[in-house]
Image (cartoon, rainbow, N blue to C red):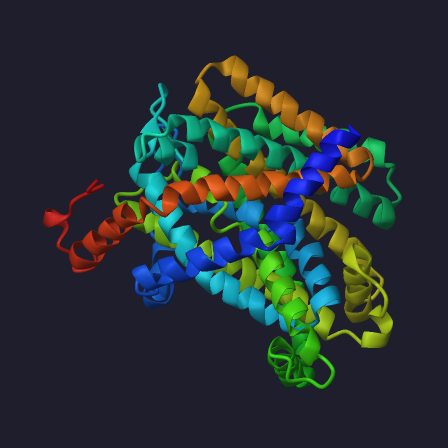
Length: 453
């Protein structure tokens, strides 16, 4: 076990310690933003319009909104709470600004990878669309072996994330309600099994109810807090910008720490470029691949500019002396207690449960898609579900630092394999975008070339 931990730590030291993945993802975001002429800005209004467009579910496939909810479920998770708090604790308020920058660039990457997933997706024997990096590596680059590699690295990552997320739920319920962690683990496994045993469509149906609910609950509480402290808001915005560029006295020498914390946490949170979200997006029933690409691009905005920013505001509007020396979930619970009283601890426990449970379901969806890349036999899908439930149970019992490191490694390797596909195939996505803008947006439907590749 010690040898395995040493190997994992060594590889993470290269991928994350040397900031290799940070440079890769930022560089990719800049490249795709330039190549698409900043599609994430130009067509932002259209993205919102598409989210409200009716898209019927056909032959077991998902509606566009359901696919959006599945991918958003994994983006909007515990990282939006604990991850943001950690970034603020280490990098200060300026880290928030760099998270915004990462989201702006990452949304272009999300557009490219999702559009490619739509172009190169397949139909399984049940008539359901399945796709993602494994499929565009196979069908776009003729590199099926790399498709298997992506699936393997994904399983490594998701095994770690399932345990981490489960543990965050059981710990928060122990603090808030004094529920035994083992009992809570069993409850979490039972609830999860009721959803994931069945078709992938069942997961989507649950998530398109949970995701809007948890977002509204959380944002409602945050807007209440901001409204009560509206006079402090200009000062908070000024603090974020000043610390981002080292303008504030005493922070100048730490600008590198501020920047890297914002970048890293932003990348962890929105997942753009990792290849996860396209696994859900490819199941959407839309009449042009660019539509879902734009919707998934919007998902990055929602994750960072809305949810992550909301968390940051709660912390930054809290009296600094109250939260001094605190970190992680404890800091966030104290911050909410400061603003809304003793209910804060309970509120965060419930919100964390919704965020985390939706993440667990989203990961189970991703895993099933990648298992289908190898085989559509039911036994393999059920084995994955049993594997996922066992990770949820084990993670809920106690915190395992090695699983955090394993998740980091899997995420890093997934990203590298995904970029091997999306960089050389980017022109295919650009061709689809050009077709969409020239013909579809001009309402010339008769001349529309669906899936031009």
